[in-house]
View 1: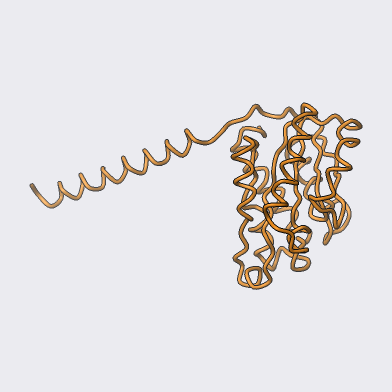
View 2: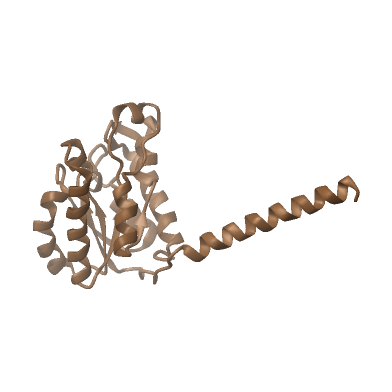
Length: 216
């Protein structure tokens, strides 16, 4: 067999393998029904949701609302912890009756050195409360902060978010906050995005939500 023929067969084999891997990846990705424009979505979180580090109106819920057409209620409170946030969730769900809730919590728990296992169970309780209200919980992964990893641009999500999303069967927006906080040009301080960072966060979130089928 000529060397050129062997090379073509090898290259064709690589293409088949790559295609098979891509199809396997797509088959494992859970698609969700899209959230209609004009729907009420609750953004439930801490200072990241609130928009600390940027001028008023530059928070990620506001930017995401502009991209999605959703009516997003910003229920972020600086300093809030997954341990405590559940107490204020019920009244918010009754008042706004959202079709979905973006849950962004855990960062302050990590800063206070709470065990990740405890934070995971607090988040599980929040997801269950959202689900019981009839709304769809959407989990935003948060990094466990490290000054060293932030300095070298290598923050990564805490593993509890992917575990929890799989266990509870909820959509996960992963990698986006870690990516923003790993870029010093997108940070107002070591733990908060700046205005450009919140814009990037909303843009990247929109891409992930689109891939999940939630945003059209």
